[in-house]
Length: 294
Ligand code: NAD
Image 1 (cartoon, rainbow, N blue to C red):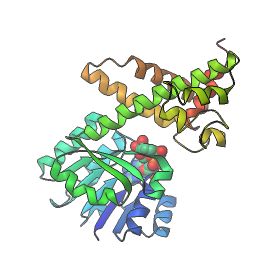
Image 2: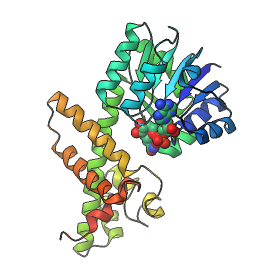
Image 3: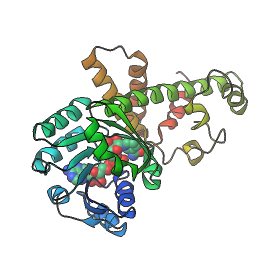
């Protein structure tokens, strides 16, 4: 078992650090929040006073922070002097430019650094069933993999540095667009007099089928249990979907790529968040899309 530095013990990182401790690793945990440090202690980690202290002597340093600015700051302020046999693993969902830059800066010092964003949400972080999509060298991936295996059910090497973030943003572009389309189709069906359950029974077996319909149906009482059955509480917040779509749009701009569906989904989620609904699960956008056109 290894010494692991873990920085960022929020909704996701708290569960992930706890799983590493459960697997027997010596987890040195840091967060700006005292409550998060207390929870980490209760979960078997050793809380420390700074990110630098968490990284000191660690075989792997894992960051799980809100956005690229936080990750860039922690890397610049606290991870600039890690030993060459330390692997740096950033599991946050961040912008592509920052992901590539921090990995290149680490590589210039002879340090392996990978981007390893996750799919799965808070429940999967706690259960140790996340999917990791990893960008970096084969050597970096091989060194990060045992730690990611201890926190997830699937660990996939997506390609070179940044490829994990590309996979994450492209996946969530599909998810945002299909969820919005699924919600508006249910709303239209209802307005035209077609019962939601009947529409589900048909479309879930026809060509309108998707994960947004059959695994995460946005209509309460229809399909398997989902956040819709909990008044859109828990799950994947609309504000995080907006963040991911904005990251995809920024990356598309830099690559001269056409993303008309992603841009429309981004605009819809921005409207949802601006209306004060960003804390709801992202499938809650069905409420906004069910309103009369006006
Ligand atoms: P969160 O806000 O709950 O946790 C982030 C933690 O980072 C907080 O505890 C905060 O105190 C800490 N932090 C911020 N700056 C810090 C610093 N300089 N040093 C130490 N700690 C610092 O966020 P989360 O929901 O855990 O998400 C983390 C990342 O995972 C984000 O990039 C998010 O997009 C991604 N993600 C989240 C989900 C989800 O369902 N929540 C799913 C997939 C991916």
